[in-house]
Length: 136
Image (cartoon, rainbow, N blue to C red; front, side, top):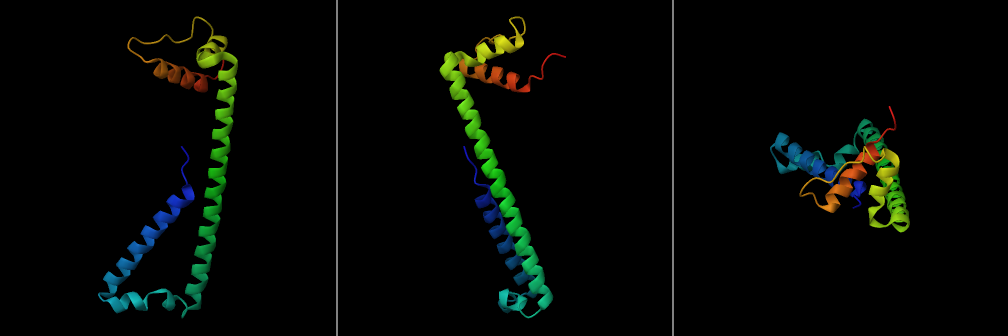
């Protein structure tokens, strides 16, 4: 499952902006206070304009980082899927058990628990293989 971090961030930013607008209106105790503190008010003070540009630049950089991270996550997920497909093609659905046998050895491969489904058992083996750090 792919999560679109940019969309999640944009949604959070929108909620934050709405909260700020409500807060400004509460401080001024009037609707006109919202208008006075709205986007046009920022244009009257050069310092506010510079702050907003800096804030926009930081937001843009942050979004770029999020997009880069998401692209990296997507590439890694594709690589894992391809590796699993290669293992499956070579050893069938029991590729995890065969790999665990080669890596861990016959004495250290975990046994299936009573009542444990094959999918759960294979997931447990896969997690053990990922966590395996080699002989001590």
